[in-house]
Image 1 (cartoon, rainbow, N blue to C red):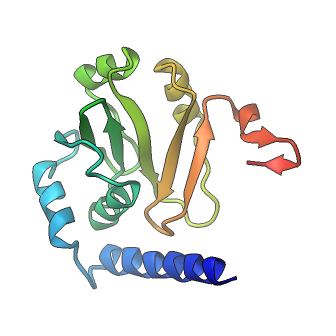
Image 2 (image 1 turned 120 degrees about the vertical axis):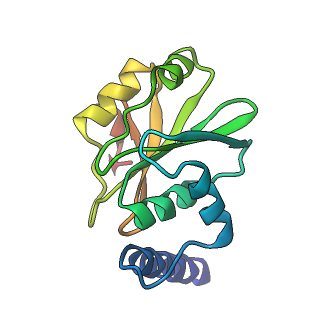
Length: 161
């Protein structure tokens, strides 16, 4: 069970570091400070090298700002979008790229404490951009959840996915 113990230790470590950042007891590392410096304000977005941004990165940005962030990915670039406290409202330019499949919504952050729950807006947005699934990460716990556009697709034989 060494793998499970390491996973639990890693999760606990992530949760503690997110809490320290949210409470102002710790700061972002240099790499994440540089990411935030490129998207410092709500509704800012920036392009980054392909697959250089992780889902955990946006959780840490959210912990530092208490705003939601989203990670979008195209064929050659990652996009980080800086939302507001409980919402990401994408610019028209990004919406066009999402709807035309030039970008995918990889993940966005939530301030969920226990279980992560995609909102009806989250699912409706996936339908709007005609994307089947995405991921939510809690910037409180560091837990991730993949969700689908259709709530019933989250159920699989033998239980919930």
